[in-house]
Amino acid sequence: MDMLAKLLVNLTKSRDAMLSQVQLIKGFEAVLTALEDAVNDAPKAAEFLGRIFAMVIIENVIPLRELGQIILEGGEEPGRLREIGLAAEVLGSTLEIIKSEKGENVLNEIRKSVQFAVG
Image (cartoon, rainbow, N blue to C red; front, side):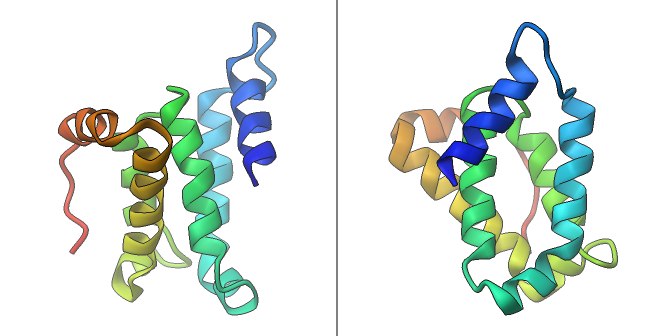
């Protein structure tokens, strides 16, 4: 999974940027739309997606504020992932990976820049 995250970061940040930030966000929105079904087949799908999101945030490709918003609005119907608790699972995994990779100070700095409710 880390290789996929690195690939996405490199495709977006490279000098010849093969993917724009907008394209990457559209792709993530599509994945979030299918996440509820994916979790039935792959119970750790939310955790794996959180790992990818963490790398994208750590590498300053997409800010947590923006990713958090698409997570909270995600699902087959807007907001469905929030309703069933998958949004919290993805965000929790994302923040946990950031903490383990970069430490609590970096996590706190990233969290200070964002204010959204996961309830």
